[in-house]
Image (cartoon, rainbow, N blue to C red):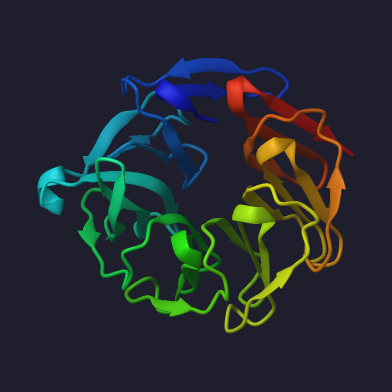
Length: 273
């Protein structure tokens, strides 16, 4: 897991113990970590992509996006996904000072050695990307943006989210069943691959930051104010779980037996069935 000021932490015993590793990225936060295999992975910090080939023990700068690529504006990378060893995508934003002036969408076809910009058909901030197979993927972001591809990311089309709030995370179980979450307790569910999205009652106004399917029926969400939500019917209804904290929870990882959620101030929550 990663955090502010290059903080990294690594476990080799299923989360029982963690060893701190720190990346030399000055004041930048680590926004995403993604492994293509048990050895090979990538992380995002500011405008730079780092890579590892030894399960995260060491990291090297793989690619740096320059302000000169954006007429002097500053790029910020938020999310990275691969659907194989060679093809991957990164999304983010472009800003001048505190103002977002454009979106960032780039593709690699050579395992991250080089990146080419793509037209996202939106200037809104792009925050998270998810792929379910080698063809179909989704991106969510500011102003209710949901983008979809069915041709391996070569082109993207906007789907109607029916909301204008910022969406922070999207997760698809299969080509039809998906969830997206964001500001003001927003939870969107689709059962037709995003052709239509429906807002469901979350019973909270807290900003929701991460969502994950565990099975076709079970899914979980974490967010600000220590919110943890669980669904047992494919995301159509939700029940709040007791987290024991009011700190924001930024991300989680769940499997059938265990779960972890990470939050501010180095908070790490674990869950066992």
